[in-house]
Image 1 (cartoon, one colour):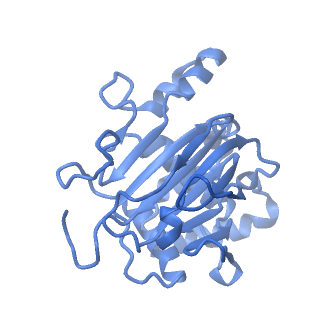
Image 2 (image 1 turned 135 degrees about the vertical axis):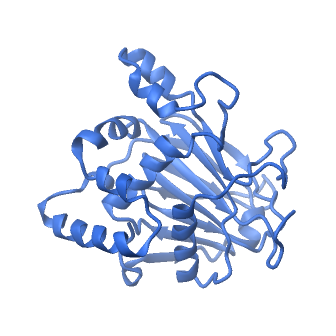
Image 3 (image 1 turned 45 degrees about the horizontal axis):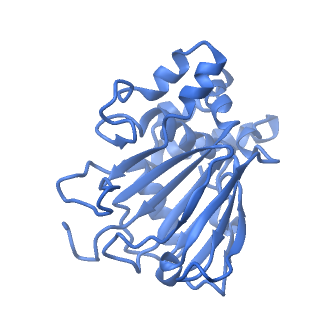
Length: 277
């Protein structure tokens, strides 16, 4: 689901040490795959969501698509705000717990480690992820990322769907932030000082380029080649992958993503050579 690394456009913000930006390295089908996984699969038990313990926790995506009334469907679509994978983040105490974790998804682990290797983070281990779901018009207030033991390990942040304005300042809220426009497929990597700098998302807004929908005759051959490669070399869920190219399957996901942004934040919790908290 990624283009050749030789074509990646990678930028470093020199006034924010440790902050890298990769302009969408995903193929259209690659973007669709991760949107589907985030909506259809990752919110299911044993993973945790903001709805865990409520009656709609078992198959949120199925419940969403069963609603016929457009107004009720739109309202229900905004109920899922986050899901956690691997080590589950304790939002109340802002910590991780060795007894509060599940197996990290193998396809996501593989994709993250591939990206990490390209950036020369050879020993990176994705151990926790928070997937956030943002309706257009929502925001994320200023914060720092300091809950993990290993702050030198990078945090990978993937954007899918609608666009967002990302602000990053300094280690106090008094410093003037810089702004980055994040479009679907873009990746932010934060390590060292940038993780401890205040950052926020003050705006989610409609994109001007639905890059995940650029599937036409010109790239059908490329899609076939991509599928053949994935079949033999990756942990990608091949059934999901093949369905992502079908209009009838993709339609419900496309209707959701027209009004939403999905953000996957992936972290390494432990220090190198540690195997538990």
